[in-house]
Length: 229
Length: 369
Ligand SMILES: Nc1ncnc2c1ncn2[C@@H]1O[C@H](COP(=O)(O)OP(=O)(O)OP(=O)(O)O)[C@@H](O)[C@H]1O
Ligand SMILES: [Mg+2]
Image (tube, rainbow over all chains, first blue to last red; front, side, top):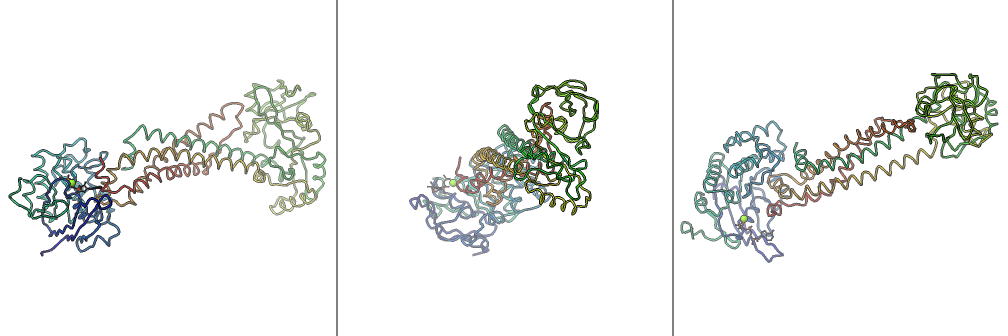
């Protein structure tokens, strides 16, 4: 294996006192700078997997090692998220009272980055997502695609090793969705980020270096180009 | 900035909460400043002039309840080191248009006179008046619309106003000076004194203390205080302070409940946002601090407003003629307490909502629609 940024082994996550096995022994390894897409039917466990990889929740079984740190023995998952992870969700989840720039600054607040530096980085990131002219707009003054691009800028603010995107284009039309993905994959190339993309859109999934297919909480061999069905 | 923006989301709700806090703080400000004002007025009551010691009856809870036998003044005057001992009688009298009228019964040459300045007519004992004479404080004279030569009726007795005086202490100017025997008769306490004002020879601090001890030893029934410390020796003022305490705690609880209600709604509305903040790296401690900060911010705003309302309220009361002797004391303590109350309301009120906010997990919040 090359330079792995994340290794997850035997991940199990159950809900409802074990009645629902959302993840049932999943192994995932991600190389640094890799772009991986995750596909699978609704309810198969894609979001759950992303939550485990992104230190949002702890698995009931198995291990996640992120950049050499075993998350099971890490008490402060919030610090792991603050330092190493960037999330983009289906709904943009921006704070409605804050401007685009202020939303982008939020992860840096958690890292106690001084205000001037926060401002500078937020401006730079909004530039990178081609929204420099919308820095002072609030989310309700932006289109869906623009909001999602602000969310991408926010996810990159802490210079994460790993960006996890859960159906970031799910709420967008084809064109806006494509633009968001262009941006994400462009930034991945530019900044050497590892990108995991959960999507139902096979044409988008295809653009990844590799696809992981999930079914009933397990990784199954990807029928690759026979997809579409 | 973030906290303020969160509060401005629901302007009306925030304004109402700020108002609720402000009313609580205003009440506390009014109570403390009036009771402090009362206290400091009493403490300056005998402080001017030449009285170095004030003699009251031992064991009474209120200076108004101190009664001493008349003869004691002469006996004290004969004590070693004492230059003079002036009998003094104070009472409350109802007169038409003024239910709380202070009477100060004095003897000729009383040190009490040195605290007043006659602005019209004559001094009480200097006046040429065959009947009953009274000198009025300027505030009460104005309120009762009486001038020199007019007649004031108290308990069916007619008093001629022989002079009007002004004074620093508002309590004085809300009352009248009259001959001690008249004051005693009006109160139905002939032969009784309230206090004895004592002048002593050597006024070095240790000599004053020594004289006080000598008098207390010679007269087991009395208490001897320095004028500026008079009220500190009475339980009544202590009780009053305790009343203020109890009320302050009540205000904190009531205001705190209002803040809690607002902050709890605010936290529930923001469940998803709070989860997102955690997802992008905010710690539970930061979330906790954020909610507490918002609660305290509401209360600090309420605190400023409350101080304004409280001071305005006290001043408004003081403008009502018959309550003109109410004088707010706005020392630093009043404002410190007002802010302490406000911060306490914010902390008490935001504590539970903050705890609820911390219990929100990012996963649950992201599923929350
Ligand atoms: N908090 C929870 N409580 C109970 N069941 C849950 C919870 N979270 C997830 N599940 C269940 O776990 C399974 C996997 O859910 P998950 O959200 O990971 O699916 P998904 O692949 O992301 O689906 P979708 O494509 O619809 O987003 C589902 O059966 C879901 O109902
Ligand atoms: Mg999902």
